[in-house]
Image (cartoon, rainbow, N blue to C red; front, side, top):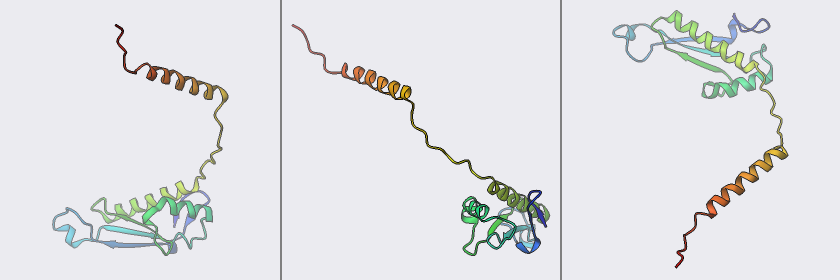
Length: 140
């Protein structure tokens, strides 16, 4: 069981862990020990998350979201399987917590009359400066 907040917990049946050999350096150890962890969370089927949270989670997950509606997190940061497992669970918790926060709705506003006048005045001044850049006629 994984505790996300006081209200939300993820049950063990929703999580699947698969251990594989990590890529990269590690000497002889890398060929023998399966330290990399692939944590799979069945988010779409989870009864603990609201639909809005699932939609935000899907958007945040990006390509880690599968077509079956699962969230896959792969961690091979350390040489220790237990630590990689902890990191994967921490990342999942952090991602779900981010999805729980509802974004603030943007209210479109109009520019004030003063800001419009300042903008037009600045444009006029700039135009006058540019108008003075013409060719200089010689007086004889």
